[in-house]
Length: 168
Ligand code: APR
Image (cartoon, rainbow, N blue to C red):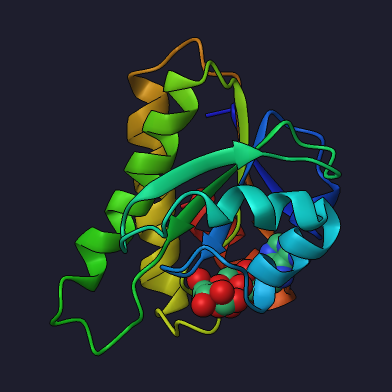
């Protein structure tokens, strides 16, 4: 799995074909990585997002990257953790699956993911990390032309979690 990379830092700095945004259903920006991406991309991103009429949880929509170094932003809406009995797991699985499907449809070869749903949405980090790594490994096993998937961790705790599960 040398096509999977782990990076500790700010996803808005990465020069890849696409970065994934952990958005909300309005797609009109917010805090966390959503806020960082909108600040770095500029107001044209907000203008394009306004034309998309939001996005249901678990689904994904694509925009240009504008002032970001990335060509595209894939906005996906993770589930809010409510104890695990409201299909949170398969909604998070769908975030990864739908983001990667959109990447293939747009001939994207390199993509960076934040730790979707593990911030404001309080999804348990261990379980979210297992889902992220499992879904990306499955995808790469079936898409040998895809070049690189980077997991971007903004803090030490997330980074050490990904490191532990990737090396398991
Ligand atoms: N680069 C990479 N990762 C980041 C960055 C950044 N610049 N900023 C924050 N993160 C990390 C957080 O530390 C966390 O590990 O992204 C992960 C996801 O956290 P959130 O951004 O809070 O996203 P999420 O938990 O999915 O909640 C989404 O928060 O910002 C609002 O509009 C957003 O309503 C939506 C909700």
